Image 1 (cartoon, rainbow, N blue to C red):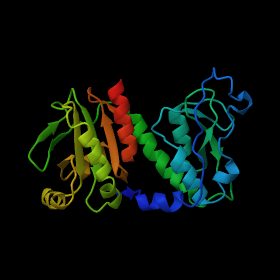
Image 2 (image 1 turned 90 degrees about the vertical axis):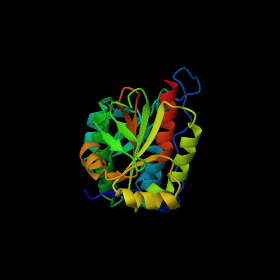
Image 3 (image 1 turned 180 degrees about the vertical axis):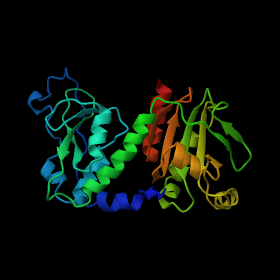
Length: 273
């Protein structure tokens, strides 16, 4: 597998070029101020989204979260299954259009990428939706069996971690984005340091000695497990780094996401259940 790496620099370079509004504050169906005529209408003009790749990327980065439990619609505005929605996006011919909802749920509608639209938008959608579809199909299922020993000799298995929430971070030493998010992840670990029912485990492709050398210079408070290329590739189906997996106390996958801020938010949700 050739890893596809989403770097922070890439996000900043495209995301900061133009201001695209995020989804407006949610209104409930009972809210008398809601404009029912606008339900199902785009929150952001399609012409603005598709004017160039910079505007597309800014919109996409601010508003599209495939891991969320959104309500999907086809191009005619008919509700469809999430899996079918994601599968359609893998064609690279459509993009998810954020539309106004009658309640607090996120609504996306399939929209055709125009012939004169951003050159690389379809390729990006094809890639991102394939990753989302693979991990959507894994949600609610047992995480593939594992048997890890970290660089300090601590043993983690599918069995001895049952009864605990487990977070996997998938990474490698030469991944710049993987390193940049470590301070944020360290803060999350410190936030929950007094809880013995949460485990933070990082799976790296690097050998043990390389990891030990790296960790002497860079603070990372996750347990570090070396030589996990095969498990990440074949079992977790990781195609972009960094990547995170949230596993519940029953050993089932809750969600797989790419951003530290998203995994932190999902962990908070899981703890409130």
